[in-house]
Length: 187
Ligand code: FES
Image 1: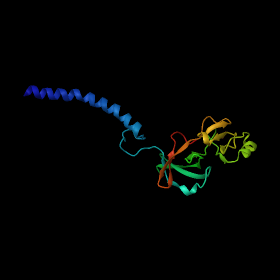
Image 2: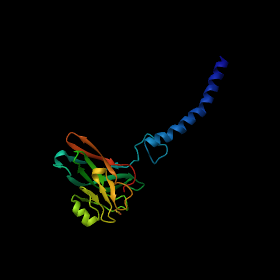
Image 3: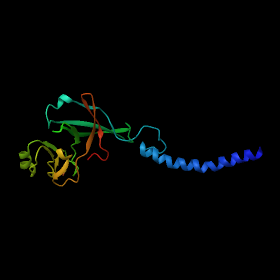
Image 4: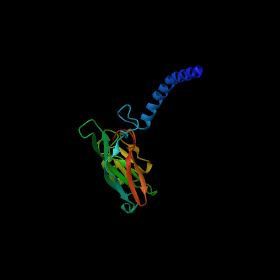
């Protein structure tokens, strides 16, 4: 009986480092899955940026291909200030493509952060932005970067290093909801 008790005590002692190692491994994994500024708050709400207000569009808002509508998306960031948060407004465009798909992009230019324009007319783009595209584009007035929306926002002219960030959309019934901005910085 005494031997059994000793074995249980020894097994328990041996398990302590294993449990501690498991805790050390699982904690960063949980924080990766649910980022939070507080080290041990792995079950609390995530500190990831979140929408402050819902933005919706109806199917009927897009009567034809290349309908492009501006919107403002309010994104909330956790901050150490009296309000506990900061809300930033991100201008966006939502566009119906000829394929019927609806896509939404941030209007913040990935080059140096100006707000770019919707330029539906290729000849207007040729005059104002020094590049003649095949169809409607986004174009930035600051250093003339041009983004081809039909090619997923590909940079077709100018110094921008990559396409603008996309917004995630969900469709519920006949409504589109802007869910959030693609991960990364605002620009
Ligand atoms: S900021 Fe848009 S091209 Fe430079």
